[in-house]
Amino acid sequence: MTKPEVPLRADARRNRDQILVAAREIFAERGAEVPMEEIARRASVGVGTLYRRFVDREALIRAVFRDTFQAVADETRAALAQERTAWDALMRIMRQSAWLHVSVQAKSSRVTAVVRDDEETSRMRDEVLDMLDEVVRRAQDEGSLRGDVGVGDLAMLFVSVVHQVQSVTEDAAGLVPARVLAIMMDGLRAPAPGELPGRPLTRGDLEFP
Amino acid sequence: MTKPEVPLRADARRNRDQILVAAREIFAERGAEVPMEEIARRASVGVGTLYRRFVDREALIRAVFRDTFQAVADETRAALAQERTAWDALMRIMRQSAWLHVSVQAKSSRVTAVVRDDEETSRMRDEVLDMLDEVVRRAQDEGSLRGDVGVGDLAMLFVSVVHQVQSVTEDAAGLVPARVLAIMMDGLRAPAPGELPGRPLTRGDLEFP
DNA sequence: AAGATCTGGAAGAAACTCGTCCACTTGTCA
DNA sequence: TGACAAGTGGACGAGTTTCTTCCAGATCTT
Image (cartoon, rainbow over all chains, first blue to last red; front, side):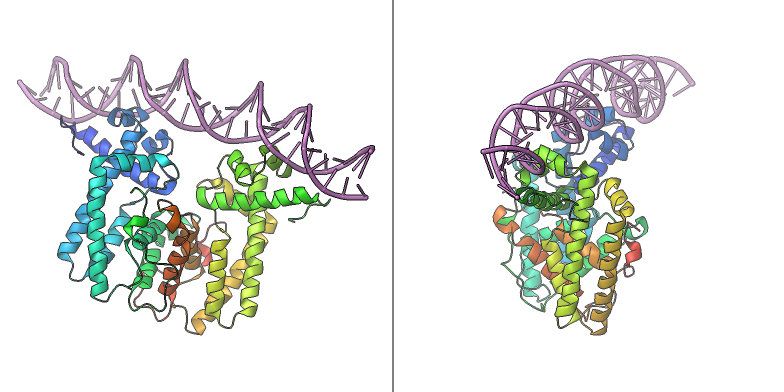
C-alpha cells in the first residue's frame, strides 16, 4: 500500500520517496524519536510537506517499515532465485540490507507497537524470515555457513553493522560498513575455528513476536 | 583524577561510582544526551546527588571518559603482560572492553569536544591506542590476526558490539554481545578467507584527533 | 551525640517538539 | 499558454520535556 488511491503529482511523489529514505536512514542511526523537522531537513522538504504526506509520526514509522520490508523481501526473493549458492545469496542479502539501512534503533516501545499492530508489515516480516530461514538451512547444508548460528544471529549481526558508525573521520566512514560486514561474514564461514558461546538464536528470539 | 582532593564520605563515594557505571552504560546504549534523571535513576540516586557530584553534563561526560579509559588502559596493560599470545591478549581486551560498555553513541559533537579538550583523557587515549597498535602488530607477526586490518577496524568492530542490542527478547539479550563478538573474532582470524574491501583503518581514521 | 556531609525530589525557568495554517509555487491538462 | 488544483515551506502557539537549584531531613564520622 505504498501507492495511494489518487496518484500523486510527480513532484509530490518524489518528495514522498525522499522522506521515506531520509526517515529510514535516520531511524537506523538514531531511533524513531528524532524530531520531525530533522527528517524533513534531510529529505530537503519542509515539515509541512512531511505532515501532509504522513498524518503523524506513527504513520511515518508504519510507512517506513512497509517500504523497507517490501524492499528486503524483493531483494531476498531475487537473491534466492538468482544466486548460485546459498552462501552467495546470504552475502547479497546482508550487503543489500545494510545498504538499505534496514533496522531501527528501537529505544522506545512505539516501534514495536507499530510492527506488531500493522498487518501488512507483519505479513512481510514473516515472509522475509521464512526466506531467511531457508537460506540459513541451505547454506548450512551446503557446508558454507557455520552450523552454530541461526536467523536470530544474522539479524543481530546485521543490526550491528547498520547502526551508523560514528567517531570515524568522514573519509573512513564510507569504508566501515563494508569492512565490518565482510569481517562478520568471514566469521560466519564454515568450518568454524571454534564453538560459539550460548546457543543459536532463532526467530523466536527476535522481538515483535 | 578520579579521586577528589578531600576524600568523600564512604556512602558518597559509593554513589559516585554507581553514577559513573550507570552513565557509562547509558551513554553506550543511547548516547550522551539522555536525561540526567534517567542516569540518576539507573544509579539509584536522586538528581540532586548527581549534580552535587558532577557540576553539569559535561563534567559527567568527562568523568566517564577518564574512568573508562583508565580501566581499559589498565586491562590492556595487564593483558599484554599476562597473556601468552598476542591473540589471547586481543581476545581478552575486546571481551573486557565490551563488558565495560566502552564507547558512547556519539550523535552529538559534545562528546568529541570533551575528549578533544580534556588533556588527561587524551593522554590515556593515546596510551591505549599505542598498546593496541602493538597488540595488532604482534598478533599479525605471530600469524594469528589477518593482515588486512588495523586498530581502526578493531575499534569499529568494537563499537558495533557494544552498542546495546535491542529488539531481542530479554532472554536472548544476554547472549548477543558474546556471540557477535565471537563471530567477529573468528572473522579476524588468520588466514583470512578473502580480501577485505577498502584499506586497513588506522588510528588516524578515528575521530578525536 | 554533635556536627559536617550528603541525599532525594519538588519546582521554576528554559529549551524543544508537535502539528496546524496559509500565502505563495509548481505541475498538469485543455 | 493559461488557469487552477495540488503541493510547498516554515512561522507559530500550545504542550512537553529537561535542566538545575534548593533545602528539610537522613546518614556518616569521630
